[in-house]
Structure formats: C-alpha cells, structure tokens
Image (cartoon, rainbow, N blue to C red; front, side, top):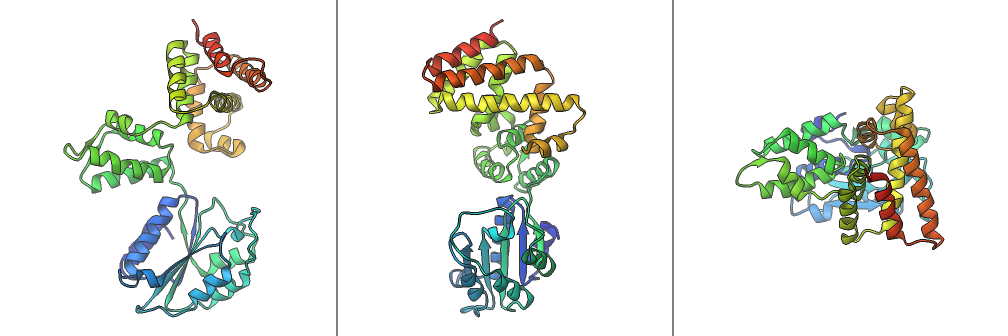
Length: 340
C-alpha cells in the first residue's frame, strides 16, 4: 500500500487496526501520523486517546496494555510505537527486555477501538524474525522510504503549486542540492522561503541560496573544485569563512580527506563500468552523494586526486604528532595544489 493511497482511505474514515510504517523518511512518517490523528481524534480526546511509546525507553508490555484499554470519552484511541529496534537485525545497547510474543498475540486479535501504529523508521527490517513476518502479514504495511530524486522533485513542485507559488527549475535544483535530498529539511526550508516570497509568490535561485545555508560537506565539495581549478584565493577565503563559522581545521581536513577518497573510489569504479546505484551499494553511501561525485570527478585526474589524499593524510599525522601548526599546514596544502 502506498502512502498516498492510505492517506486517501484515512481521509474517508477507513482505518486499519494495525499499521506498520517502514522506511527512514521521518517527514513521511510524521505526515501519516498527523493525518491519522486528525481523522480519528478530536481536540478534546487527543490527550487521553493518543499514547506514544518509545521502545528504547519503555517495555512493550506497557504499550500492549494501553492498546487493550478502551478509549476515554471517545470512540477510538491511537497507540504509536517508536524505535521498535527489536524488528531489526542490529544490536542496541538498551537494557529493556521486550516480550515480542505480546505484540504477536495482539496483532492476531487487535482491539476494535484501537489503532496501533508501529513506526519502524529504519532502512530495513530483519525479515527472518517471526514478529516481522507476522506484522507484514497482519498489518497494513506502508512505505515511508526516502523519495528518489524525481519523486522528491515532483513532491516539492506539487507542494509549492498547491500553495499558489511558483518555483523555477534552477531554484528547485538548488533547494534539493542544499538540502542534500532530505525531504524533512526541504519542507522545513520551504516554509521559510515561502514566507520570504509572500508578495511575489515566486521562488528563484538567488532567494534559495540566500536563505538556505550550505552544509560543511557542501562547502568541502566546493573547496575541492576551487583547488582543482587552480583558484587559491577562493579556497583560502572559504577556509577562513568556515573558521569564522566555528569549524575546526582538523575537522575540515578530515571531511576533505573523506570526500577525496570518495572521488578516487568513484573515479576507479566509473572506469570499471559501475553504475550509480551499484556504486552506492558497494560504497554504502547515499546515491545522491555518488551522483554529485560522478559529476565532479569526470574533470579530475586520478593521479592528482591520489596526491591530494596522500598529502592530507601526511598533514593529519604531522598535526596530531604536534610537528606543525594545523592552520599553516592546511593553507600550504591549498597553495601547493591550487597555485597556477
């Protein structure tokens, strides 16, 4: 069941007794919960008939006990389970013991007056576990996975147009890039941008770039470009701007080293015929990062990238052993490789 299909059913008053949300896009999970609560609960009984349990803080037995309790001054109640780590294959350092048989028994015979929502906001669940198998069989399963790029673009456009605004293609590109394809951040920044553009109702690239801050990783991305394109003034200016923002040169160097390593890996894998999706799986990084690296690395020489990596690794050792000043080393690195 797609999220949109289920939201349509909920708006018509058609509810399932048990929902299982699977995927790591928190914005979509929050959208589902907001829609469900608005459809099921009134303002009067919201406090009494909506109960939320964090499975990293409270035992499952308490949640099931609440799910089996009749609602107060209302027809239905909503019980939400957050962080159900016992559905994954990962180890968690949590001392709470969960009896998953209680959940298993409940989903087989759920209360008519309770809507139970299991918010498994993880990339994947452990399908070998009995409780996962039964949940997928008995519950209404809804995907809240991160949107692919085209889906994200369409979602943002529809959101903008639905509020009678216009966004230029360049502004949309910039917004998605600056928000690193994170829907939650895109929608948060969009509220701010729309408020700024209230009179014109038009969102342009300059507006987006003036209101949405770049991440440290994006600044590092630009710094590599400046170095490779022999622009020492821009490289040094960006370094100073990052220092003024409170960043530390050691941290900047470490992220720069990671980025150059990614560029080297992508460059080699491109030569071997790998596609973007395959690279993301092998390197275990977000596909969008791979896409940006692919675009950036085509103009770069693999040998030069290797030299950059080796120099940064050596600088890291010199800094940590106290042989040279970290600021001086970093600026010498920039001048060495970006000077004409």
